[in-house]
Each structure stands twice: as C-alpha cells, then as structure tokens.
Length: 182
Image (cartoon, rainbow, N blue to C red; front, side, top):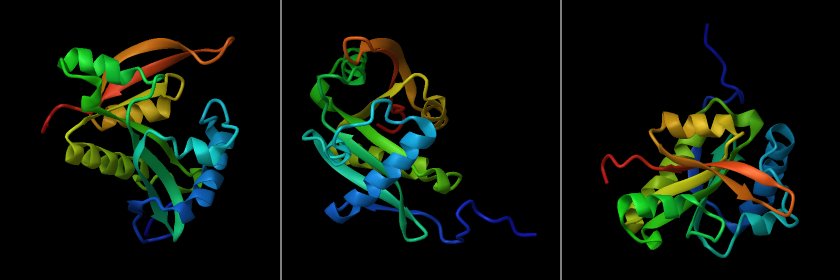
C-alpha cells in the first residue's frame, strides 16, 4: 500500500527566490505558524516588514502543491544577533565574515516533506557563495527548530539570556553551520 504524503501531493517541494508577489502568502503562512507554534514569539506589528529587514541579503520560499509552504532569509548581522559575535571569537574572524540565517518557518500543513532542511541548504549554499559562515539564533524553547539544526550538523555555540523588552528575558541558543567543507 502506498503511503500518502502529508499534503496529498506526489510532487516534491521546490525552493526558489522569494519575490514581492510572495510576501502576502508568506505573511499568511507565518500567521499559521504563529498560531500553531508561537513563532515568532512576539508577533510583529508589520509582518511584511519583519520578513524584509534592511539587513536582508536574500530570501527564499518553498513551494508545495503550488502553494508557499515555507520561508527562509539570509541577513547581515543586526545588533540583537548573538551568534555572529560568538562565531567570530571562536573562528578569530570579524563579524562581517558571517551571515545570519533567519525567518525560517514551514506551514503546519506542509511538514514532513523535508522543507526545513531544503530551505536551510539553500541559505547555507548562498552563504558559501558569498564567502561567509552561516550562523543563527533560536529561542531555546523552540525544540523542533533546534533538533533540525542539530540533525543538519550545526554546532551549538552557547545558550544565552537576552532582554527582549523591559520585562521579557528569553533564553536563546546560538548555532553555527558545521565547518566541514568550508
């Protein structure tokens, strides 16, 4: 008996550059993820702007069943990013030798197709193409994301506490892509 995929499609997911036309669908999927998983922890006032920060170098979407099913970005380091500094100290390079993997999410209906790994591979490939090392920060309570990164061979640099406002302290796990092949 043939097993059915989660979405019902036999067509594998694909990854492509995000376009401006994708932004509405990305916000819709992000809202689904937020409702299902609580990511992002603090819902942004303007979700489209949150997905397109000025530090963004590139972004991609995963498509399954002709629908946007996931998203990932690659950015320059921002003030709140901890992993770039940790990696730079460890690797004895400047922070500008890193790029931050960010805004990764997969629609609940599309899970089980390897979309997170596909998106991560695309962001890592772009970082390599640019000659920078990919790093990321993830809320420590997001155990599914941490499990993905660790399955993909990412190295845990540290777990740190961050202030996300006057009354919100959050534990954040900082990762760097494996150094094999760099």
